[in-house]
Length: 116
Length: 110
Image (cartoon, rainbow over all chains, first blue to last red; front, side, top):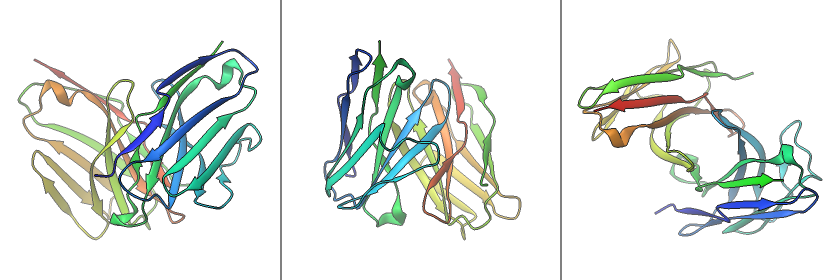
């Protein structure tokens, strides 16, 4: 149980285009989903927290107009990187929590984004 | 702010025990977690411990928590080559966010 999927697993795009990443909880309802960014050989940096049906809460320094988050249902959250630039290239990981089981976060497999 | 520190590398021989250490600063943390990350993959929850516990054992994994010193450790018994990965400890802060350490890269040599 507690499986989280992400799609796509990797994406290459041209500078200036927008990229949408999906995060799904497959076997539980996720009241809260989190989006992280990870640079090579570094830890995870929390970008934003989203609750179903509410606006996402962004961490300091994260541009909400750049990284659009939608949590439209209890099993799906999306992250859209708008007008992507090479510096947005990174590994993006989502996690989901059902609010029970000690509020454990279950992580997706990650999406690697490369902006050319 | 909260901070979580880990040593960056650990190398052991197959069959030995591995001990990965972590220190944290937030004394109000309720849960502490250990996650495993293999190359190019997401994080896999290994185990967690509630802050009022001293120890938790789950098969080859033993978690020790010294709340007074704010020290957490993960012991892997009979370490195998498949255990080679990066291990992250994390604490849950008062706002419910996970604060991660830098990760410890475990290398298991045959």
